Image (spheres, rainbow, N blue to C red):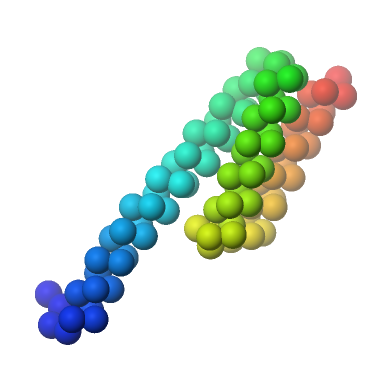
Length: 89
């Protein structure tokens, strides 16, 4: 149990940040999964629309330092390659 007032505050901040970060990461996984499902189904227009939304969410998460910037870039690149190969075929 923390003794100092600042330590108690740090525990409150950590729990609040963890809750926020978990929610955003969960939303990222959900959007990515729905994009991959639309790619697997061959829905070109839906996949292109979802790609914009997913890329925006990854950028936001990286900007708020919830995930690393290179992690966001790598995921966006891989997803856009899949969408491009779908529209190309």
